[in-house]
Image 1 (spheres, rainbow, N blue to C red):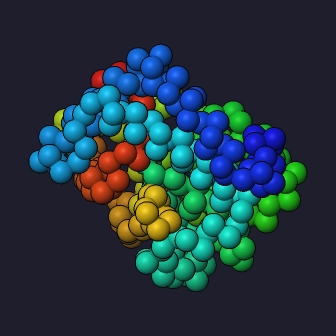
Image 2 (cartoon, rainbow, N blue to C red):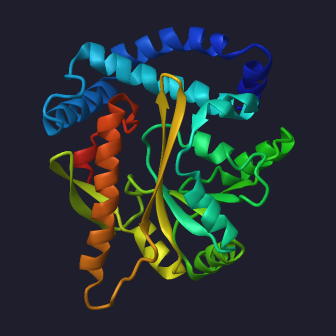
Length: 291
């Protein structure tokens, strides 16, 4: 990643775009699982939207994969060239600013839709805005070292949360108390979730979503927002909405209460998929997962 960063900074995006074209074509031709996943998603969305989104087919799936490759270039771009942030449209910035001014942090729920890397980069050059990205991989330390090695002035840290232990909960609670934000991608069920998920209607068909992000928000007793960043013709559009002032999970109605908050998140996710149909980047059988 370090090499790609320097190539982008000193050669430019055109080099990556040029190289990615044949790579995407090769991937499209020889990666049947991704093609099938794309077609399934496009078909589901096309029916759900009443035909207002791209019809499924080889060309639409190729464009879908191409959009994913462009998002990879964008991820490098926002770190290598901070001036790109000038093309970010963030009409509800005041929501996060007010939360920041309150001195208490919050949970930000995103998804593998659009390019959340743009939102992460907002911590660069914004004093007081600290983002903690919760991930399920073991590469968090490597990424944190990379940011420091490249001298990127970003208040950003990846936090590995393979499981929600008491120690992890205390650490995250301390982050919120310091006024920091926790960013969680809430659309994928972790492999080690042990069945802690619920199936909710998504684009007209039940799909599994993890309970973990909402349980964590309940434990932290802090506000919860949804945040998405999608590419537009003029740049990037960040959409931020408050999902709940606080997640209340009564013991006797815990499952039902969880479902209410999760359904609100899924509804927002559906709306974003309709407005940016080719920026859904889950290239696997999303509805047929067996957590």
